[in-house]
Length: 253
Ligand SMILES: NC(=O)c1ccc[n+]([C@@H]2O[C@H](COP(=O)([O-])OP(=O)(O)OC[C@H]3O[C@@H](n4cnc5c(N)ncnc54)[C@H](OP(=O)(O)O)[C@@H]3O)[C@@H](O)[C@H]2O)c1
View: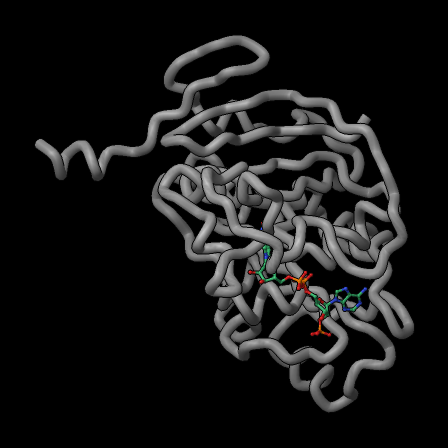
């Protein structure tokens, strides 16, 4: 009996806006039904004291079955998963694998979201570029100043977009995704990349997992880096709970 219970999908209950049991994540996280421009959603996890990664230097110390379930649904709903190259390197990003449960969710779209990576160095795992399916090629956003030879090598395997001189410009990233019809954008960070989008007021939605851990001061917050402070109000749209973790969904006001 115990193993049957352990294998069952985690149950989610809503605490806000209305108490409700056994929440359907696909409905809870649906993108707006009509989009005329890219909708930038971030999915981030934080410890109870605001840390963005654990002692391993990765997010797995903060993640859980329930967090992975939300991440899977968010990826299934998205047209493209956008990440900074450090996250891609540290978290071992590869093309997203199709899942049986996404079949209905992705009807009329490629079986998986594309992965888009932002990088100056083009120091990316070759499989991330070469293993993607033809209808969901990896997109590499880079700069004019990026190493020419690496840029050519990447362009042989992936969709390379030069989106800035010395720094990729967030606005150009969203414009290039729109040109490709990729409107449901899911950024998974990291904190430095996210700061560049929030600094320009481009974030539409933040899906935040609050994980029941305390980390202490060694790790970064979920928005970090050199960008000057840029306060924005957020509206709490929903708050779910599963297995002790809280899942808040905020939209930009
Ligand atoms: N808590 C969470 O939800 C969460 C989510 C994701 C990641 N993380 C953790 O966060 C850490 C990594 O995140 P991070 O904030 O350090 O790095 P990051 O934002 O993932 O990536 C930074 C890198 O992205 C590229 N980049 C960013 N902005 C750029 C621009 N404007 N133009 C050109 N390239 C640009 C550069 O890549 P190059 O170096 O290749 O030039 C830069 O070094 C890891 O420990 C990861 O586990 C946590």
